[in-house]
Image 1 (tube, rainbow, N blue to C red):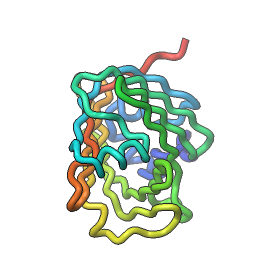
Image 2: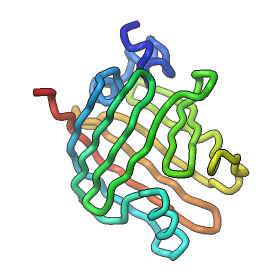
Image 3: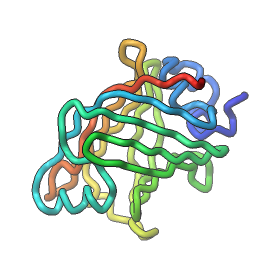
Length: 183
C-alpha cells in the first residue's frame, strides 16, 4: 500500500482507507504538505474557566463564519496541523501510539488518544484517554468529545465538539475546507 507509512491510512488499513470519500483521502493522505481554506463556525461557553482553558490550549475564540486557513506538514507518520481561524491560531501534533493502533494528538500540555472508526462517508475519532504533562486524567474529567471528518458537496467537512463536566462547552467548531492544489 503506497500510503502505509502515512498516519491515517496506516491506522485505518487499506480497505477502509479506499472506501473513504476523495476529499477525506486528500486531506489525510500521504502528501508532504496540505494547504486548505474554508469557513468555520466556532462556539464555546464564556465562563472564566473555559476561556482560560481555550487560551492555554490555543483553541479558537467563538465566532460565526470565521475564515479558516489549514496547513498540514507531514514527515512519515508525524503530522503538524496549524489552523488559523479569524479569532485565533491552533496548532497540534499528531502521531501514532507506541503500538501503532491509535491516533495521538498533542495540544500544548494535553495529549488526546483516539481510536479511528470509518464508514463510507468519513472518519469518527473516538476519544479513549487524555493525559496532561504525561499524567493520565480520569475518564470522568474529560466529558464528551465528538470529532468527525467527512465530505460535503465535494469539500472536506469537519465537526468537533468538546464539553467538560461542570465546566461546559470548551470549544465546538464545524465547517468546510477546500484543498489548495499544489502549484
